[in-house]
Length: 92
Image (cartoon, rainbow, N blue to C red; front, side, top):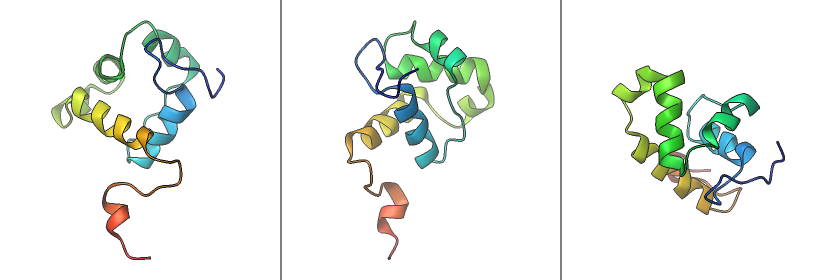
């Protein structure tokens, strides 16, 4: 998959999402096979919900898919090298 490919609703591509997941401390990555399944769903909240239900159901006890989608979308909206969350509050 090309780094610049987007989801059906125009949101970020797989590589960009994987980078944001890592930045947020979410240690899951969407490989091409997973991505092809998730591309059938519309919108990041639905994609995250499906992913968690099928590949990491234990995380549903801790995270709401809509909350994670909101975090991911917020991070995607920032410039690539900006700091986010608690790390932004740390002193250099």
